[in-house]
Image (tube, rainbow, N blue to C red; front, side, top):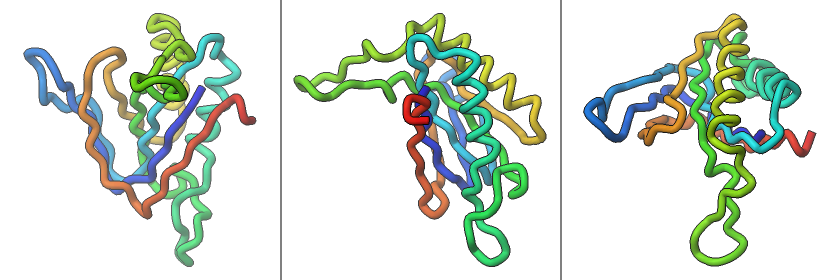
Length: 153
């Protein structure tokens, strides 16, 4: 599983296509925007790892301005958006390949289980709509952007 995390002052995701284009499906104020890519074979271990990272990473400033607070202590929220392109391979040619990403049905299961696990924590959780084209708008705070890959743990 891969996560691209951005500390934000606000973020929202809207549907990009169809009769409901422009509809906001998820929004947070201060918190973390997590773009989530799922690999084949990702399951309970990767979900637990990702949830722990999202909830426990100390990337918010304390009173002294040091990154010492996690999202819960900072009073923030989480916006979780599926992003299979995190597994895009651009080493050859001009078009990325996505064979390293999980199949949509398996990826959706893992994505939804991650969201459910996060919702059991003491933090507001919003999400995008799996498999739909979306527009993500955010204000990166810091800027703070982190790349996490479960293969590197």
